[in-house]
Length: 412
Image (cartoon, rainbow, N blue to C red; front, top):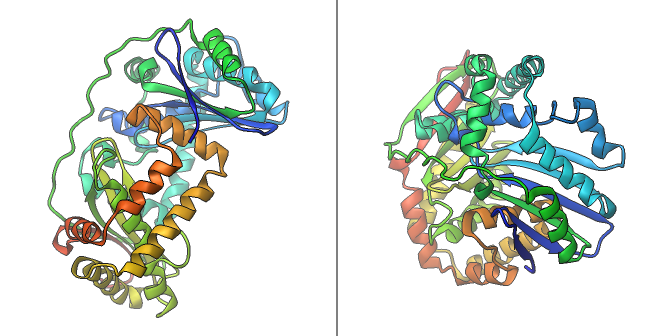
């Protein structure tokens, strides 16, 4: 994975990957998200992401929104538990315009009170919309149950009460404590020479300075498994079950990524989909997910099905997990699982925006980015014995936390 890492005089890092294309992509990734919020200000990181687009010292909201759109470019942003990201796609000649806008939004936003009021209303509607989608709501509620009161568990959107109470000084304090140059990486992918990227980056960002010494994140509690059932005004049963898992730096991370992909990852040929949906017609959607974080991870399985099929679906999920704990994958099964996973990763590189964001995350998390060959080598090195060990560590039934959303009129 050929790339250049440029470090500016102030320590800000730029990861650049040259490609032949008339379209370029850029991102500005900040190593902060909802897990860095204090109690009473849940929703802060996501709220700031919205407000960055509202007014800066030199641009109005309309000027911000039109700056790239008037040349056919696309500007967007998102917030996760540990990251905040601005991203833009544009014709090659508009690199300076895009980076200049990034610099303005991140370092010169003014957060006017009237815009705060309006944007709170927008996010309150977003929270209501999310609550109307049980398949989305259960994922966040499950994580809250898994981590119980820890900031990593709470919903990225926050709570209505906290959102309403956030003041401008809270925003300024959060940015001072978390938007640090040493915790940022700019990613650029396009048909440029490295010296041009370095010159523009130094010109637009080299003058910046920011305090160092980010506060430590709260440690992750080790909690016992718990099962909860919540009655909702819905028609189907929704279930999430899972466990805390390996962090970004754990040596078994690659193995669990492979095992998760085999069990319930992308595509219709996953084990859970074939055995539960295709064979028995139970559960329109069934999938598993593994998300590693800086100091922990989350493995989960989700399904939604009719109330009369829910218990059977649950037992079949547990049966599949038990099989993986008791029986090693055969040589052919393991080969096919690796082949599928490697192919999906290779196809993912065609998404150039996703690729440059992934490179920026790697620089933040590991101070480097591995080549595709190195990644594939690690996948090929995973053994059936290792997968069996992982399954017994993560899939043990007694350690699984489960959350059910059931129709209000159902006994469950």
